[in-house]
Length: 294
Length: 294
Image 1 (cartoon, rainbow over the protein chains, first blue to last red):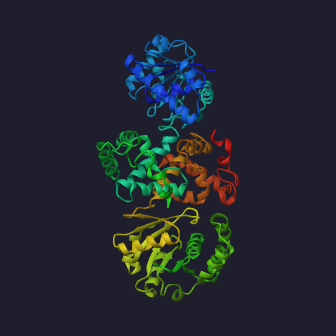
Image 2: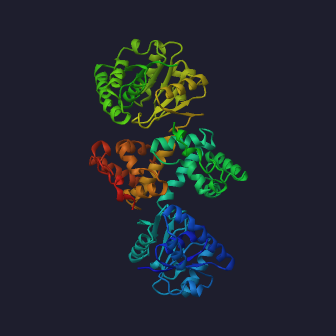
Image 3: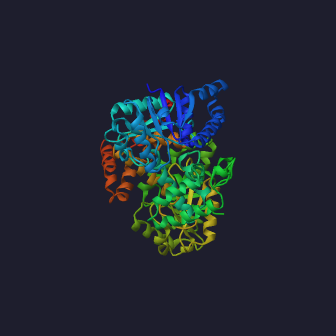
C-alpha cells in the first residue's frame, strides 16, 4: 500500500490532491520551490477546510488530523527521498517537468512510483527523463477533486501493470473512482468528450445561431443534465477555456467568432464563477432557477 | 392562433406530434398515403395512451377527448385544404418531400403555414417547392416528445418573422419549449452538440481505450448527467446511430473500429432499448444501479 506521498507543486490542484490524500489517512509532503510558494500552498490547504466541512461533512477532528498529516518542504532531499508515491502537479511547461523528473530520479528510492497530473502531456513524452519508466504513469484529477472524484490513470507502453494496479488501489484508498485507460489518449476520457462538446456549444453562440441560455436549456431538456455547456464553461473559467480553444481552433474559421467573443468577455472581467460573472451571474445562476426549463 | 392542424405522415414521430397536438386541444388530421399507412398510424396513436397516462398523468377523459380531436385521412383535399398549419413528418427522401409540398401548394389556403419536422434537411432546400416560402420553416421534435419537450424552430432567409412567431406560440400551446434558431444550422441546436459527443465517446470504446461503462461512469461523475453517451446511444438505437455515423466518419480512419464494432452489435441484434439489449440490458440497465458510480 502506498502511504508516504509527496505532491510536487502546491498550486490549486496540487493543494487539493495533497489535502484529499491526507484527509484519507496518508502522510503527505507538499513540495514547492521556495518559501513564498509554500506559504501560498499553506493558505490554499487551509482554505480547503470549509469545502470539506460543507461538501464532505468533515468534523473539526478530521480537519485537525488532516493538517497533522500534511507537511511542507522546499528541500528535494526531504520531499523526494524514501517516498512510496510522488505526484507531480507543477506547471504545464515541459522544461519544468523534465528538470523535476531528473531531480527526483537522482534522489528517490528504487521503488518510488512517479505520477503526473498533467492535463496536456502524455506519459511517453517524459518516460525516459524519469529514469524508471516502468514506475511512471499519469494520474489525472479534475478540479474540486473531493466532488468530481475521478482519477484517470494512463500509463505509457512501458508502464508496468503493477504500477497501474498500485495507482488504482491508491485512488480507491483516497476515495476516488479510478478510470484506467488501456492506452494513451490526449485528453484522457472526460476531456476527449467534454472539450469538443463545449467547443460546439460555443460555435452555436459565437455565430449567433442561438444565445447561450438557449443552448444550455436545449441540452438540459434534451439530456436531463443538471447544467449545460455554458454553465460548465463558467466553472472551468473563461480564461482556461480560451487558452485551450486558441490552440484547438487556430485553423478553423467557423470558430473564430466564438474565440473573439470569449476574448471580449475576458477583457470585461466576465471570467465565470471566479469573478461572479460569466455567461451567468453568481451565486444563483439563471439556469438553476425553476422557470429556466419552461 | 393556429388551431386546425394537419400532420402529414403517421410514422413514429408524426403520430407523437399529432397526439401531443390533439392532447392540448387542437383539431388534428393525420394524413398518410393509403389505408394501410393510416391503420398503422391509428395503432400508433392508440399505443400512446399508456405513455400519456404514465408520464403525463392523463385521465381517461383526457384520452377520450384527445382521440375525439384526431381524425385520419388519405385524401389530400380533406387533409390540406383550409388548415392553419401543416406539419410534414414524411420519410427523409427529398423526392417524397418535394412531391408532397407541391401537392400541398396546389390545395392549401393562402394563410396556411407549412412546417417540416426534418432532422437532416434545411428549409432553404425546399422553400421554392412550397410556393409560399415566407410561410415555411422547420419545426423539429425529438422522439418521445411528451418527455423531451423541445420544439426547435428554424426558418430560412425568406421565412417571415410572423411565421416564426406563430410557430413559437403554437409550440407553447402544445406544451413544448420553443428553441428558435436565428439562422439555419444542420442538426439544429441539440444534435449539433449531441452527435459529435456520441461519436467521440464511441471512438474511445471503438479503439479499446476504455470500455463503454467506464466512459459513461466518467461522464456521469464529471458532469452530473443522469446517463452517459452509451446510455443515450441505446435510446437512440444502434441502427440509427450507425446510419448517421456511416455518413459522418466515412473519411476518418480513427473512427472505423467504432463503426465496425457497432455493425457487429447490430448483426447480433444488440440494437439498444428496442431489443432489450445494447450496451446495457433492459429494463434496469447497470448505469442506473446505485454502485455504478463508485
